[in-house]
Image (cartoon, rainbow over all chains, first blue to last red; front, side, top):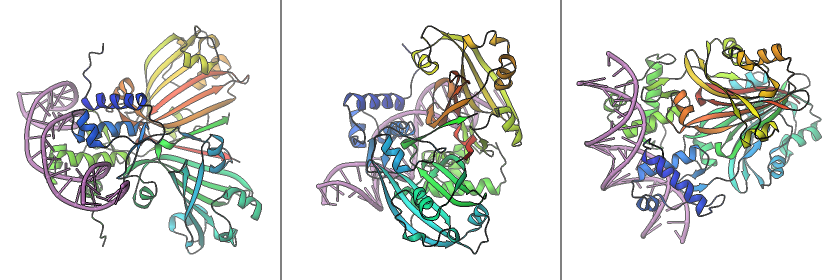
Length: 238
Length: 238
DNA sequence: GAGTGGTCTAGACCACCAT
DNA sequence: TGGTGGTCTAGACCACTCC
């Protein structure tokens, strides 16, 4: 009984949403090709894509670059206040986590890193890049920096498992505090490629500085999430 | 020296970014009309809008529905772990906060609200809706629910100021814990209209449950942010 | 009332994915 | 190699803002 005239792409959006429900398309099910849907709904691809992008922004469907559109599975809750690693909290929420190490190397601190770690620019920093999967879907690209002078022979660790546990057990590192920043960005280049999204797609960036008991930053992380894959959640004592 | 062929809208995006910098367009400066830019850059409006949406997704520019495109001011940092109100943290970051009360009423608890407050469905809940401004720009729409039975004569409070302070002083409420969830959504209908965005534009949703010292939820907030206006930030003791 | 942004059409070409 | 998604053109109409 609404008297407001809806734009066509909104009507199509609503139709697609119902279609997904009606056909009982499960998590990660692939939608028909754009041309097929557009013909079926008697519209053009441009308009259809407007509707698809709408559903994407809402996190109802997601895209894989040049592969098509898929139904989004439930979001994983991520609690930055907890000392629990990716592998554990994904499992705890009934999904299968997986980690793929992309690159391990030691670099000279950039100006930015030197500033973060409060070290000189020529000093060495350990860098780890990996992709994290949930139920075999790439959802998170992370870049971890560690002060190389704090962790000798770090490269011998198995980085496809929990880094936190490894640091505590092998080096006796004491985690005292972390500083977290989170905001919206766009996923670009290597990150976009790793997550199978179009370069420029929206993403969630979470940056963390972790301090030891002497107030020194020993670890700095940059996490890039597919935005529909997670939500932040935390409990705070006031 | 890049051999990768960039899509035209990315080239235009880059050009616009430089233009904004070169013309020294300050915060909230308005870009020329789409037709003017499109003609100038010898492209079509569709392609130009692709570039504009890209810059929008990156938070470099923002949009006001049917008014045009503007340069985004710096982001406000928002720390959900701190008991500091909007008015204070905005001021502390060198900007001018403002609050506009949209609606104050008492409603019967919906199923969802009854569940959150752990009360019966017929019970009354106080509802407050307001828009928050930063430097005279509407950036946040919030919906606050309070248990009506906890706060008699609540309607006499001045809601354009800090609610937290009012609750503590007038009712002696003890804040013990809060539970925060944050994820990406799209802004719709009344919320979109209030924030001057197109219905369906991306937004950040932050939901908070606040507990008293008897583990009862007495306040529940839903905050809808223009995504380019803020970033989450917090320090956590491990 | 002029000009704006929001929406839409009916095509097209290309690079890439799946087969 | 055929079909797909990503990009792009050159128009158009409408509702709304701004003057």
